[in-house]
Image (cartoon, rainbow, N blue to C red; front, side, top):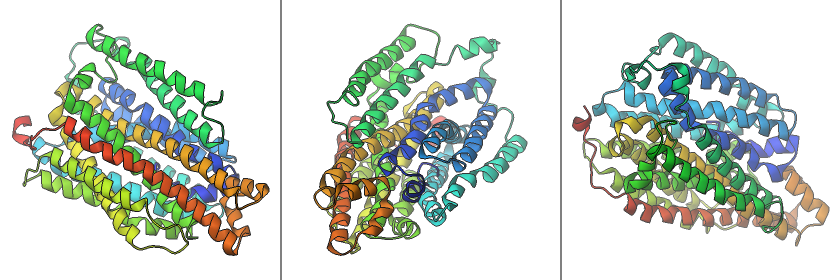
Length: 493
């Protein structure tokens, strides 16, 4: 939920703390660590048991949720969101993983429906809760509410969750290795390379969004450094997969050699971009262009949010007894996203709310739900048993990575567009005021206000046009991973 809860509250937060032009960091700071540590948590759970690592990650998330709620500046909030994301990614990755170990294979389609439905429902609930609490200083409760809820969850896990699952690696590994030997399995260097890629790329786009030229010393060197980090990451993964016994690779090289695995990871990345850009920009559009409150904006986003879990549930049903191949489900989801994005990018920018956009939200939401369910259910069938933990975490991590980079790119496109075009209709001091705090829109009226709202509308349409490319790319990516295999639990029983 914390990946989306600030989407409707961010304007209220920045109106109080300032820094609207840096607001996307509230999302990307969380997503950076949420993305960068999933595979590390998965590997640690192989060594130290699932229960210990789930409780540890939940504890970190709880403590720094409280810290986020106590933030006095936007910089403090961004810093605490970094650490909150470390805990959040452990919870997210391991919760999906343990169900494959807790339930028999014949019930995996039901599991996929439940888990993807709950995850998607959380993404829907986030904007609603954020919108409801984002009046005055109440926005702090969108973080503080995590503390009592997670405290109860920690106690419940300590009491009810098995100390060790009979089939988890920490139990089945009978090699008698010491803790030091076990820790050697962690690919720390690979994690540093991956996190470096994420930080450099997202920071470069954020700097561009702040107005620095793409060729300036504040932007270009960051992008240039991404290249050696990417080369180093994949070179290192090849080495540790093919040449070394330790550490165990974050991304086994066999994933890169399998067209199905490679297609799954690429599709996860692409749909993550579509999901997160829509979650962030749809409610903000309703608030800035149509003048709605944060809660009203969250309600207006329900057609998108509700059909993400609805699409996941429908896809899981279709992959169950009807035995529709997951790749068919994924392809249909990609087409639905593409159609919805094309039409959503053409919404008029006047203050009137145009009702057809709700149908376009439904199409994108269904498409995202289809892909989420199809990709998760393919993991235990497309990947070897030894890769179940890393495969599940990889699919989740690449989806978050897509959202992280997607938000950064969308911000780097729309924020300079806003700044450039607002100067044509407003004095410089008002442009700076609007870019710092959107509540400055209340200082405007008449035709001037309509013109400014229209500029905001065009900036959001620009973001959706960017999304069109990612939705379209899912079609050839699905062709890359094409297999007519249906879900057949018998072979995994």
